[in-house]
Length: 285
Image (cartoon, rainbow, N blue to C red; front, side, top):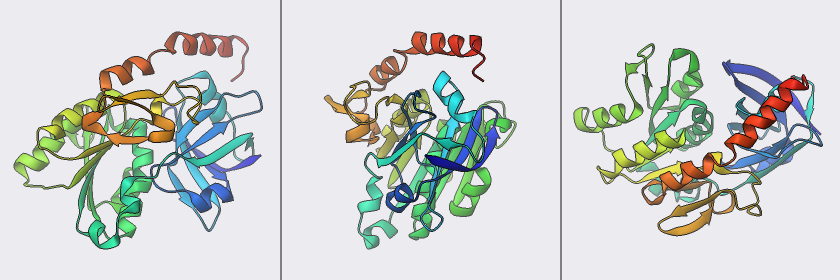
């Protein structure tokens, strides 16, 4: 059992939990994920690691309550325990393996959307600790849905915020900010990393492709089993079929077939709706 050391809500329906998991914390790297189960009968939920503390032996996860199983996880409180917390799984971010001297000469742009801001944080934090300059764009529908802004300011060289309604930062899309940084502010980057809703990542990829800017995306949202056995997270990358959980979760954005990925993401929508309805009827929450 994995004890919940801390629980708090970052925004409506977005829950942060810090989990006592020393073995996972010792091995975790930016970009990797864990498989979580609320109880013995719970569904396996893949969640990208949002932070880790090797000394305290804790791993932080951020969960958005959009389905039956994520609601069960977020219904737990401090002092309760998760039945399973397996990981770290998946491949770490590419920059983790780069030689130090090569890495220090690079400049990164991270684009985070909604709850995708949480897994961006450990990557930016790691790069900051290794002396790499990183600009970050965070996008959300409105100010109330922005998360990790204070933490990101501590590790990013520059933080830019975009909201759909203009309630914080600039009014507009993250792609508008990308264009402004490159076209009007003269920014130059070696790589862009985008994590967020699939539609956001698609349009970030289309935008950066016009600038020939290498772009990496995380397709964690496609995963179900997390071990490559179920095949639900199949994705076409450069015309080849790969599995998000074992070949990723990060891929070359300009090679990903996003339209196929979005169709796959919507495959179990009816089943998820039915599970939600059943959960409400049995007063599980």
